[in-house]
Length: 498
Ligand code: GLN
Image (cartoon, rainbow, N blue to C red; front, side, top):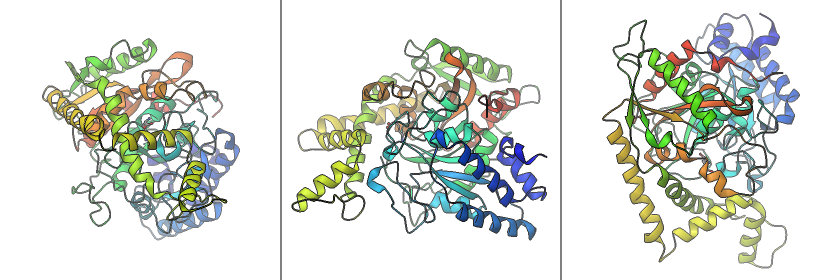
């Protein structure tokens, strides 16, 4: 095996080479660090530290040499810069946290580290995970490796671009309203947002706590399954909303999606629901075409397609953009220049210090959401906006449960268009919000969802198929995606020049 091809290997393949001692974790780490340096102009990374990564790789090599075998041992990854890390700075993509160093690791980070994964650095993201194009990062935009004039999606845009450009085999992301699925879709990689509470939120810089959820981003469902098995699991002492369900070996479960499946029709018995609202005029024709041919492929694998309805889909946009800013305005109040964050150099008194520190530290989109959130929570407007939004949120969740009486998995597009040009929507927040139409409703309901590469649309840009499962059914989603990936090769395609 040529060392230069290491970046084309999946997590599973890399782990096998490491276990067979054909290559060391130090060699793998050096290879990826060199690629990251070469491709710096993509803007995917906010921090690297070769000394730290190589020390972790050497520790993994010692474990491998001692005969230890574990599915992720010695394999590198990087974390979205929303997870706090002791060994790297954590900025959440914001000037507010420039040079901030956490005294502890997020639970997801420490779990993957104990599984033996090597951290290559921190990945660029929209400021406090607010955005859909990664153009809200206070540091730099991220380019889409399929066309560097286009966005990679957001807010986990650095994670998506890095995986697509093969700067690493896998990364972590977070999804509050689509931030794992949408960038995965726009860069042609695979990502899963688990059921709310599956992964601990401890050490994830909070955006909207009732929605935030961590998940893996990689090239295939198999690799996502390997990572999720280590990331997920209860964390009762540190995140009381983490689900009290034992960790699952998702990788072992990959073939169980269609209970009555046969070799010729592995998805036989699986009913896939197509919500009329996901296939309407709001979705561009190129995306619909790719999604429909992916659905035809799933049918060939034995799945049955059924029509379902999610009548409140359109309302998910106003509901989310009331609830998420409300929670953000509360979560972000801690950044006051005293307890955390940037402090203005010049001020007259305490109030002036707060005002200046916050106006200097937060970017426009974050400021906009803090203002909206404060408004909808204020006396006199709380009932009209926040409470109303919470009631509709419940109805949206109930609609999903009705749909799941007719089907096992819901499918549709992830994003109504392929990746747009960098800057195209930067001055139009509403245009950004509208692009979240297919991801927000399942986030509001707390359901697991994933994006699976499904072909290409306009300008040769990737299109993702969204699969949404019922609560705790990550294994079923990953299994269906895995069967699809055994029959298709969209997830193996790579941008030219990579
Ligand atoms: N695009 C959505 C937003 O801007 C979702 C972000 C996310 O999931 N973190 O809020």
